[in-house]
Length: 288
Length: 317
Image (cartoon, rainbow over all chains, first blue to last red; front, side):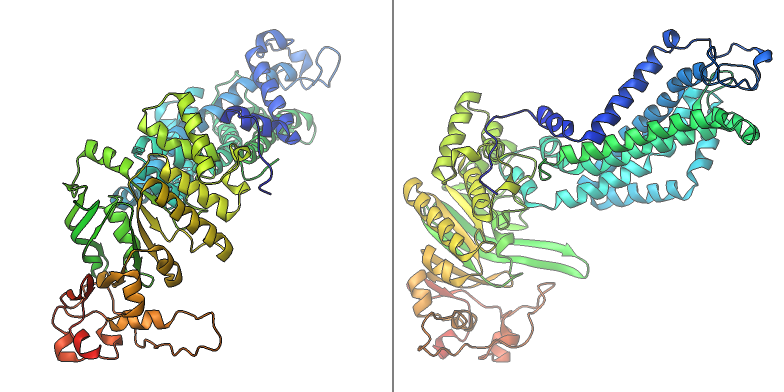
């Protein structure tokens, strides 16, 4: 076991990348995510029609050469709407998660590292926070701030704070008690260096995985907000809102809900698989 | 010549639920350059806390510590930085004492980075040298701790402690988590290093056979207090404190024809939370005499350099 040695030194990033590359599912997911991001960025060039171009003669049209995925009730091209929708859904998922992660990880780290009263107060506040149903909180916040995509992102991000905070704290607690933290103190490493070099690298893996799951959850929560009119405002397309709009006519025109639903599923799955792969790649104990 | 390390009446109390835990309660000793002080005692007697307190990994409740004649009881930030280059620690558990995400070389190099006196190239050179000193093959340079066995991990811990060329190292049960054959390797490594570099050790352990082999002086601790201190050979020949006698009688003899009669210590360990004055071993002592033992016990020098804290030591020996 100990006979194996890595002869060439690589940076941490290069090492993680090398491990990640060996994970096929994660690489495919990464490819899909990059593709979705590119589609979102270049939607103006990729979409065959504007997302709000209506043509009532094409109401509920089946897929054809002109409209590959058919049209919705108002005769808008589904494919174009899905391409433009990637923008809103990605922004919702990634943006809200980023907000929750930044605040949550900071709060969790403080609670976990300092412990004592700081920890007790912060975690009890989180308890109170979590006693409010998450979606209710989203709706209330979004309603107070006014309906728009930006506010929906903020609302979801704020409502999601306790998740990463809790995971980060628990994870730090297990690392903090280990002797290598004391060893670091004994060699004059300051608090900042100990947190950055010794605690975070050992504590971050579960948080990363949960965040990728959160991206999917937030995309769904955003869809919910859009559905009740608090998220993306029509006629701007959003995948979740598209599914919601299509639910009345699901029996007759099932594909209307199917395509955006599939998009949500593929995106969510990709983020989850990438998160799994990233966790494995970040852990040197799982040699692969 | 002043002693390298002098500890005077050191106390470390923890406030816990239900009172104050006297983890280290009035320990005094001196340690000369290049010597080894063995600290023995059962689990929970405060020997680990003693080591951490001396290194300022824990705050001192009261008492004084002198290092090379200088009072280092409450150092300021700058003094503490300088101090930690002179005092290091080797940990018990070679699994939790190494950061699993740092390679062997990164772990050994970190003290050098913190010291900030060398160029990068010099640090690499020094790390290689340190690995060679502790007997780690160069090919393990970029290995992660999980790829090493317990003995090699502990060697990494030793190399990290040596990196700043300390004068004093606290060895906190450095071998109790290792196999016996590996224990011998690590102990011999520590002894070789001491001879070569003149490092003083405070060797904390509950393994008496190890401490006999490595120590110049041995200190026996019981519930935060020193009950006996003598040179290694003297202590093993003439234990004076009833607790030491019981401890030593528990060592297994490798000779099956030699009949040993271990002294069985009965009764429960007194709680170190809010202890009553008087001998803390009293409840379990064969020679206890309630009236006398309730008085605070004084450390007496019964023989030259042989201290014992037992009011009945003269009568029973």
